[in-house]
Image (cartoon, rainbow, N blue to C red; front, side, top):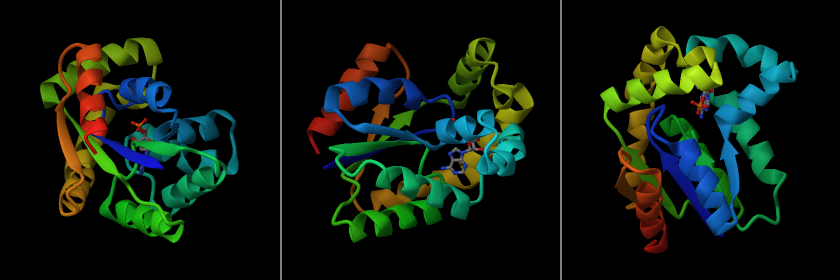
Length: 189
Ligand code: AMP
C-alpha cells in the first residue's frame, strides 16, 4: 500500500497534482472537499449539515469529517493505496487517520507539502473562481479559509515532521515540472 497526504493551503495545486498522481500510481483519490460538495449538490443529510460551513469558508467539525473519510476508505478494500487531498486539516484528524490506518495494519507513507506563497494563492483562487464559480473562492471567504489554514491546518506539518514523513516541493511554476518533483519525492519514500 502507498498512502500519501498532499498537503498545502487552498489553491496550492493539490487537486491538480492528485489527478495526475492517481493515474501514475493507480491510487484512490480522496478529497474531503469534493466529497462535501457532492453531498451538498445531492442535498443529503450530511450536505445539509455542512452547506453553510463550506459557504463560510470554515472547517467542518472533526467528527463529521473523520467519519465521512473512514467510510470512504472502507468502500475501497482492494485499493493499492490512497491520496488524501485536503485531509487531514487538523492534528485531531491526523491522529484519527493514523489510528484508523494502524488498526488495518497500514500507515501514511509520506506527506508531500506543496509550497506556495500567499500572493500566489490569492491570484490562483481568483482565477479558479471565474471557472468554478465556487462561493468559497470569493475574496472574503478565501481570507477565512487562509485563516483556518494558518490557525489549524498548519499544525499538521510538525505532527508529520516528527514522524519524518514530510517532503517539501516548490508548488510554483509549470504543472509538469511540479509533478516531476512530486513523483521524485514519492519514488524516494
Ligand atoms: P477544499 O476543496 O479541500 O478546499 O475544501 C473545501 C471546504 O470543505 C473547506 O473550506 C472546508 O469547509 C471543507 N473541508 C474539506 N476538507 C476538510 C477537512 N479535512 N476538515 C474540515 N473541513 C474540510
